[in-house]
Image 1 (spheres, rainbow, N blue to C red):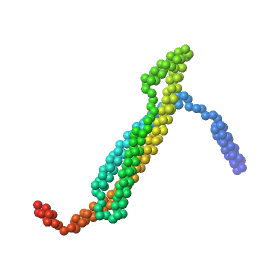
Image 2 (spheres, rainbow, N blue to C red):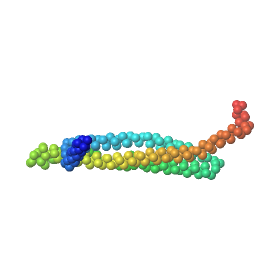
Image 3 (cartoon, helix red, strand yellow):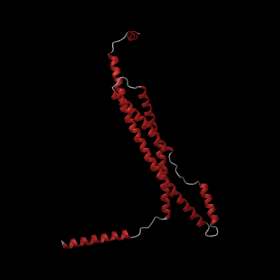
Image 4 (cartoon, rainbow, N blue to C red):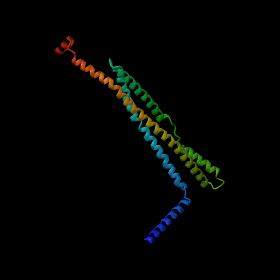
Length: 223
């Protein structure tokens, strides 16, 4: 039994020493070509992420228009002869709903046109830069140095534009979340504001049904 325990401890110590040795070794960095491919993929990923985020803006527009129509309906059907608490509830939550719609519109504007992305240069600009590099390094190694300069420039462009787009996409995503929250809260407030209107309408319907028929209504029925 003691021999087995000793063997297990030896194996465990050997395993720990292997892990420690591996952690102390210097890890090889990405090769330049691998880094270039990684930055290129990240750039197009963020570009696709931005486009998808902007495509999602059609739903908040539809919800905003629907809420504005509902608030307009509530304003045209103000409750009459209701208790004071009901009128306070109506106006408080109706105003809150309209203010939240305005706030959501502000965040929507920020998502749509509030940020400016940095894009890659045009192919013509890169080609002109390559020609200049060839002229500059013509007295040295010529095409090899020129190609290295263009490669380094493109790598820097991918790093800078991807970093900028990642930051703006994160801000767009957060503001789009705020748009959703504001519209959701506005919908809740408008539903609460509709409650006194609904009660007032139901009371009027019951009153109309309970009222005795008038001469005008009797003639209308005969027709």
